[in-house]
Amino acid sequence: MNYNLTLSPGTYNTVVEEWDKCGGAATTPVKITVSGSGSSGSSFSSLQASGGWAGYGQGPPNFVDCSPSPCDGISFWMAQNVKSPSMDDKAMEVNLGGTAVYSDTLYNNHLIGTDSSQGLPDTGHTLVPTLHDFTYDVYFYGTDLALSQAEEFDINQFFDNLGFVWGHECRIAGGNEWDVWNPVAAKWTATGIACYPNSNAWNHVTLKVERTSSNQLLYESITLNGVTSTLNWTFDPASYPGWYGVTINYQQDGNYKQQSYDIYLDELTFTYQ
Image (cartoon, rainbow, N blue to C red; front, side, top):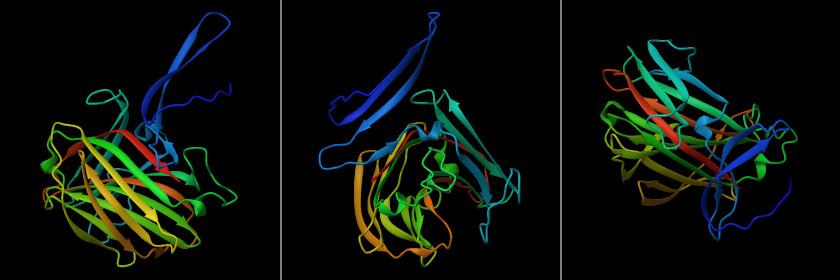
């Protein structure tokens, strides 16, 4: 089937249905996001329910990946298609605990390029180097967000031995402020933007970044629950020999007691162009 349909900007929850010759039928939901005027791009939607997620533990002082759980005093696990709390019966639940204080769990998904979970391996290396604008859009929910030292959402692009790592960290127990990652200095930089997500409610985060024509990382804006803060900060990329592709990360950080807590992700959409 090949059919063109004109849609106004917005999000559409559609259903695809098929019938067999015996009268049986099956359906699957398909979410379609149409960009507004002046913008374009392709999107992966409902990534929280997608395959390809790999989880790791990380602990101070070096935060080296360990797996499987438990490892290095860190406990972590992930469950998909969680129905409650959920916005669409397809939430992703991530738990962090253990005994090693201030330790984290990182979940990573390779979207485009090497080990693509979305069927875009880009084996000819013709797509990834052309991409320059990215948007990470997600809802998250926690019953007691004070247990979270920080919530981290990252966008990563690798090609020509360069690493464009746009890291965004909402410090909660760590001070209720957004930090962004400086790849060359390998450190977080405070933005002065407040981050006060709500417990027992869905919090909506939209992160917009760009790789500039001069190959710098541009942090454009951070939106939390409808409030947009514009940054327009630039940093240089770091060296990542041999890495190739576009990936996203989600990370939970443990507090001074490493108290166990759950975060639910839903409606995770990644847009690229």
